Image 1 (tube, rainbow, N blue to C red):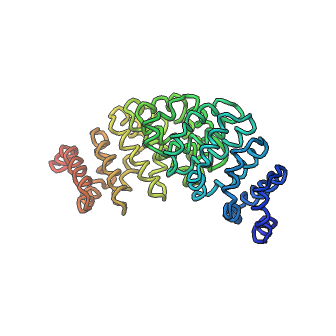
Image 2: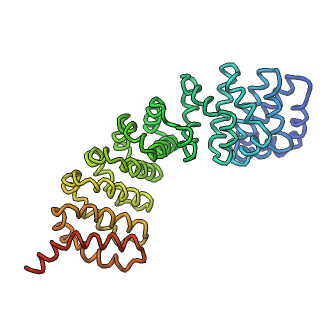
Image 3: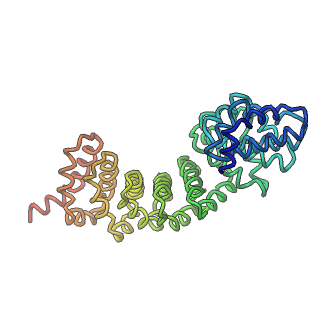
Length: 376
């Protein structure tokens, strides 16, 4: 606010820095409270970290006074809403003290430390330093405590942005965590929705997680959310569905539950959403058992509209979907009725080897139907 800016721009900051080093505990506490308040504002946060402010907050964590440690943690929690400061905290070794307090402090101190960790876990460049200090054990234990569950969940969700961590440390193996992420995805807050769905999408990138996610109701949850006004939420949903569609055993269920949703994504104005929607349809269509459902939904017409898209990645997913759908001769008539042959011929002019191969495969599947038309 205005008062934060006034203090940050005045010479009072010099006295705050001196007060942080005072021998008087009350003076130190008050100084850290001032720094914490100034760091809570985006406009003045950098002022709070400069001139020894960051170091003062880290030093406070190493003392014997519990209230002073808490003020230091709150101060660092506010400061660590900035990517550069997150890295600086690690450079100065502050993460070690934060993790120690999140493990050994009293309940209130652990909660303050967890707020810091949640922010630090948003920075992938410092993950190795956090993992070395066994941050996963801390977060998994905190997640089991009711009063720390949501904060720990945010931190764990952020950590899933690292493919290495998901695979090497098996993040997401706990079904309870998956249930909580699915519940968080139902939030009315778009940021929380995105965080939860992106975490679920990354978990779905691992084959063994997909059926567990399905059994925890992820498809039904995503179905209820796909009309979101926020394109980033819709993009994450489409991407999550594309990852889930890699499971052979889930494709029929996806055709039953998610076909209409995928068709809406294919019609989107957002390229990433379109690509993921087409990719999911292409994967589902690899299972010919899903074709009766896809035929009744008139998927072929929707997909054909994207064959001549300007982006090669979208063309590739569209022709892949078409090629898989053409495995059913029942769809040949629809394909020809919607001028699919003309689109297929135009596609061969695209400078994409994958598109050429898939177009040739599609012609091969259509050969009997085309020759029948010629005979007529």
